[in-house]
Amino acid sequence: MKFTNTTNIKDFMIIGFPGLPPEYNGAVSVLLLLIYLAIVVGNTFILTVILFERTLRKPTYFIFCHLAMTDMTFGTVTLPKIIARYWWNDMTTSIGACFTQMYFVHALGAIVSLILLIMALDRFVAIWLPFRYPVWVTNKTVCIVCVFSCLATFIRMTGIVLHASSLPYCDLNVIIHCYCDHLSITRLGCGENVIYVKTVALANAMVVLLFPLAFIIISYFSIIVAALKMSQAERSNKVLSTCAPQIFITCLYYVPRCFVYLSNHLGFKFSTDARIIITMMYSLIPPVVNPLIYCLKTKDIKKVLTERFQRRKVAVAQRQRNNVK
Image (cartoon, one colour):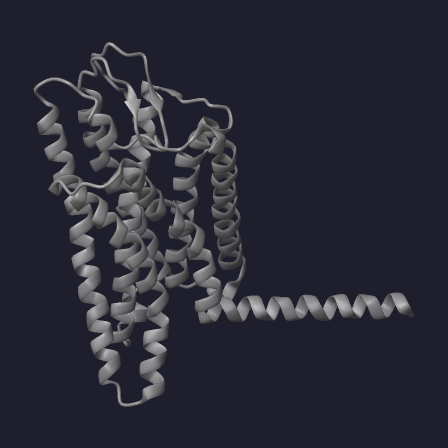
C-alpha cells in the first residue's frame, strides 16, 4: 500500500493517556505487556487445542480459530508500540507505520464484527434448521465465508486509509490515543477534504457496526424465542447455555464500541482519558477473556481439556509408581 501525502510533518507522536503522570509509565507498560502475553498465550492455547483435537474439527470451532487468530493479530498490531512508548518513552512513529497500523486496526475490528455475525448465523441455522445444518454449514463453507469476509474487508478498508493518507497534515502531529486510528489522525488534517474523509469513514463505520449487529440481534432473538418454545426444559436450557458465551462476547465487543462511536459523533462530552480507556477496553478485554469463556463455557472444549488432564494425571501417577518399584 503506497501512501501519498502532502504534509509539513515527518512523523507522528503517540501520546497514550494524556492525563497519566510520568511516574506511572513503568506500571502501565508492565500491565500492557501482561495483557499482550495473555492474548498471545490464551489464543495460542485455544488454537492448539482445536487444531490438534480431531473431535473439535467442526465448523463452530473453526470460527473460534478464526476469531483467535484475529485477536492475536490485533494485539500484535496495537500493543508493542504503546508498550515501547511507556517503557522507553518512545512516542514517535513514522507516517507510513502510523497509516499501516490504522489500516490493520480498522480492518481487524471489522473482521471481528463479521466473525460475530458468522457465529450468530451458525447458531441460528443449528437451532432453526437442524436437519439442514450438516449440509449447509461445513468446514469448507465456513473457511470460504471467513476468507471472503477478510478479503472484502481488507479491500474496502484500503480506500478509507488511502483517503486519510491523502490529507495534508500541516503542523500538528500529536495523536492523543494509544494507537493510530482514523478519528485521531484525521483530527490533525487540514484542508477542504477533511470533512469528506471523515464522513466517508463514519458511513463505513456505521455499516461495519450496524449491519452485522442488526442480523446478530435478529439471530439471537430468534434463537431465544425458539428455546422458550421448546417443550423440554432440558433442551431449552441446553440451547441457551450453548449460545450464552457467544452472546456475552458480542455484548462485550459491541456495547462499549457503539457508545464511543455515538458519543464522538453526537457531541457527548467526557474526558479524553475516559474515552481512550473505554476504547482500550473493547479492543483488548475480549481477546483476553475469549479463551477463558471457550474453556469454561463450551462443553466440548471443557470435556477435551478434562480428559487430557485426567490422562496426564494417570500418566504421572503411573510413573511415580514405577519409580518407587
